[in-house]
Length: 311
Length: 210
Image (cartoon, rainbow over all chains, first blue to last red; front, side):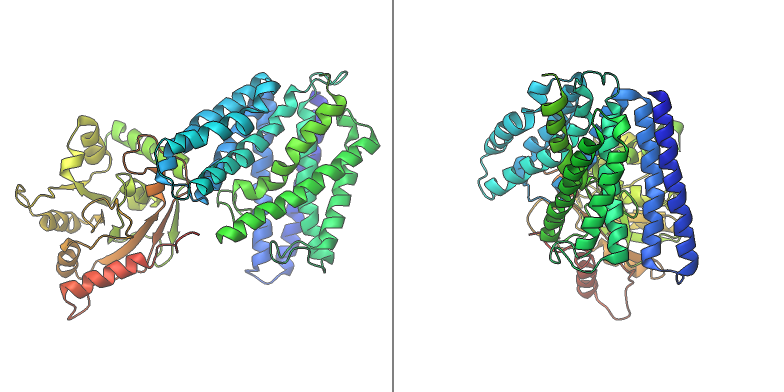
């Protein structure tokens, strides 16, 4: 386990070094002050920080990963709620969402109580948050506010928590190695984002969704999804999957990731913002970086649970 | 500043960042040292904390909020935060009971070389309007200190973080936008100046979200 972890970390660091070197070469060729290059450099620098933080969390094992994603959920929820129409009357419901539902969800994930963490937000929070709002007696925009609050919890807490939830799966012959499932999910989905960007910049012609996300092209999508899936297949040795299974699962999660980016772009367009936040330089906010993981994690979790887990 | 006050200042700024991820947008002026009067919209007791948090360290030390003595002297904790931590210029807002002239108190702080954060609406805006009509103190300060830049500062979203009567904040992203500096121009009377200052501040507010 530890030697595999070190090999993988070395590979990730090598990729970052190559990316940093490539960006330096591009910077020297480009005109000074080129905004695309500046953004590229900022993105790569942010990746160094993100890799360091994730590696640190992995070093602390399951608890480290659960806490890391709980913090990501907090930041994502803060970003999402900022763009909603919630009213003063929803204050207690929102306080409960952030300070009760979020920690509780991650405690349940941490102790591996599948039966409760998979229904707590879709059932209990779904019913009790509007009750808290209704008790204040304000009906104006009621449905909009409670729907947005529930959406915020589903996206920022429920979906994100399915990344650490992978730790509670019990796969025969794979005991104690579940952290690699998280590594697999994050690396495949995130490299799909990066590769879609690279293929799109190199070959992109046909825009897929000009209204939602003008930078997404068919060439970027096909190139990114396929090359990331090949990468996923090449990572089969750290997973309980065969090469073909690893490729197929990668295809599913990269496509979910693509559509996740599309949906979250639609929300940003609707609310008239370019990014969800500003805390990750070059990338925007936490949701900007996590959107593809948010949409792929629950699906990945349930496919693996259905076919590999002993339940 | 005592060690306790310095620790409290860092704790309060850290808490403000955790809840609001506050970001300063230096739209009309750069975050460079220099004496200024920052005037901001007022929705919450935490307003000056946000402005103070986004100021660079070197500016923080020389920037004093102007706040109501009735609130900030009401308990030992508030007195510690208001006086020791933020070194606030505490003014008595009630003209009948006060012994010191607020404009004079602010003028003394300026004469000592400090910058000020003040809320010309005079009280927290709890209603639906963007801005309450400004009190005249801002004009008198401008007239008495013609060489000091007055910088409009729009604090956005803090009223949603802590609506009236709330005890626990909801984490939401807040921004603090600094506009272009202004001064009293020759021949401008009180009403004109205050109107211009109100307009400069309102212009920094983001358009209503749909």
